[in-house]
Image 1 (cartoon, rainbow, N blue to C red):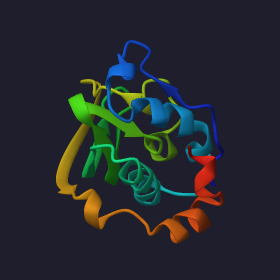
Image 2 (cartoon, helix red, strand yellow):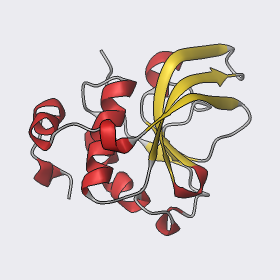
Image 3 (cartoon, rainbow, N blue to C red):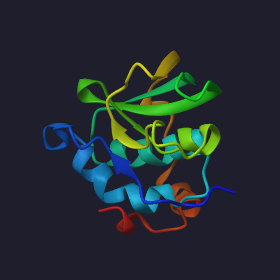
Length: 143
């Protein structure tokens, strides 16, 4: 079982200029505590971003963490405008290493994300009633 941790983000990121980033920063601690793996997490996040009309892409593929010699496949993550990624589940499988991105970040050479498929948010999110069941919280918990 995944134990929640306090999410972080790339402090060098100009997150205030990226659509949806401020919302994700508000929601991160609650989202990180959900009992969802990468696919369920991306569905929950995409549901919220779609509700708030935030452009985003969902990627399915794999991640290679060169610094620790591990990879995960399949893996899903969210991409916002400007190539900023949102991933709260890579550490679930790669370990809680500081080198593994967690939260909002720009991809780096030491941990590569390879997209095999881009999934349309229109066919990916949950109905709002199902979201509340899986998120174990009402939508109002994600203003």
